[in-house]
Image 1 (cartoon, rainbow, N blue to C red):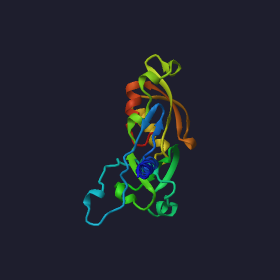
Image 2 (image 1 turned 180 degrees about the horizontal axis):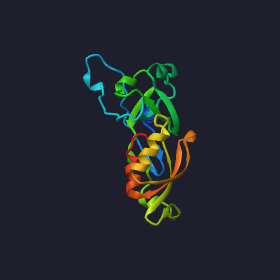
Image 3 (image 1 turned 90 degrees about the horizontal axis):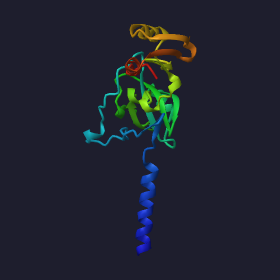
Image 4 (image 1 turned 60 degrees about the vertical axis):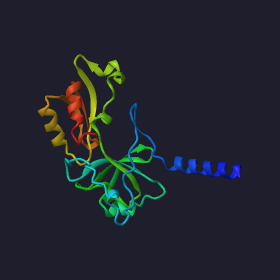
Length: 194
């Protein structure tokens, strides 16, 4: 009897471990997304999430999604206008979704979690910044942006913040910048900046 109970306990623990969300790594940061895309249960309003996913800069909204690789349906993703972009590891991607979408709108696609991209995920902590990145008061960095944003919008944003920039490569959505930490943090809050 004890063996049966022990076996059942181990089985429950292994199933729970397999279903657990995996950490997404942004530099030294480890992020766990809340599993918020669930199957609707008739009459159960709490399963219809109205989580705010952000404000779009272009025609689509940039978010982070984590998928269940065994259940992902590329046809369902396409039908709902969802485009998976850069792979982040741990079955997670940057993705473009329709503006106004909620997590419950993504049901049936194989996505298990969706979240707005937080500005703090985009930047390393002050302790992690190497000396060679600092030039007096400025940080020397390469800024990237999402495909939903044009170079002209990024250029206007940089000029409005008085950021020194060079070596722009719009085809690769990348530009070198030099700016104080506070300005870089401000740029990170812009939804279109990766």
